[in-house]
Amino acid sequence: MVVSACAPNPCALDSPRTDSGKNSTIWCAHKLPAPQWCRDAQQHHVHTPRSGTPIALNAAPSLFSESFEPIPMVWHARLHLDYTQPRAGATGMHFTHDGPLRVLRSLYPEGPGICHNVLVHPPGGLVGGDVLDVKVRVNEGAHALITTPGATRFYRSNGAPALQRTQIALAPGARMEWLPLETIAYPACDAANELHLDLAPDSQLLAWDITALGLPNADSPYDTGRFVQHIQWPGRFLEHGVIDAQDHRLMNSPLGLAGARCLGSLILASGTPLPRALREQLLESTQERLASAPEAVFAGVTSPNPHMLVLRGLAPVVEPLMQLWQAIWAAWRQQWWGIAATPPRIWAT
Image (cartoon, rainbow, N blue to C red):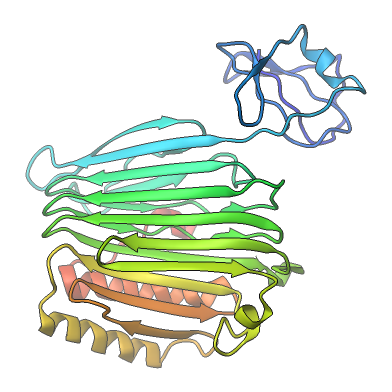
């Protein structure tokens, strides 16, 4: 039996509902926030927030006595993705996971050589203490594209930090496209979003990160909270920013975010130095596109070293920056690899 709490609703304790997918009974309680408890269906115990110490249960309804103190529940979810080339011109994928983090069925809209996957986190967001660990390995000759079905959300913290950590390792001759939809830092969050890169010679990567601070159009401004953005390729590139909502000079100064509440980075990275002529062509074509970018977007592109191009931008909201990033991703893909862009189907839903 799995025991959980649900948001206030008309169901009563003497009227359990059955989760047919797991053949278990879920008891619902009034006046309790969602969700507060996790009972392991195999070990038959409830885990405390951090230590994992079990608390014995006699019966599910006793959980909901007036004197019961709810136990905050945190997740540490792991997902490991391994892409291989089982035969020439084909990419296969194997994954293992622990906790509520997985990928949907592999799709091949561009043929067998490029594997598209959608990374899914069923809880829909992270709260204080949650950790999401994603490790991606792309082996020689394989080509992977990963996106998400919606925004990654860091909610208000309960006092502990939340962390999403993504590690991408590319073998020689591998290609990877890391294209998640935006990350939203909610007011009063305490969160970190990390992207760690390891590129072998002759491997190639296109990756972006887009972060929205608060929900300004929903009257939920980012006026409190702390968000850490970290992107690192050891020896090649490091971006580490601490965005404290109370740092008004950072948030509103022309030398900071200038009042923008959406920021993004788009990276083109090669394990082998890019030919100078190609870098100059990519820079020039990107600057031409930026000249016609939406007026609300402020962006610039550089080549910090012979292995990389980095595009960074600011916007008041996500939509204009996301549209620009998608257009430049498509242009870089065509110009660098000679492959027309095939946007993941999930973007159109």
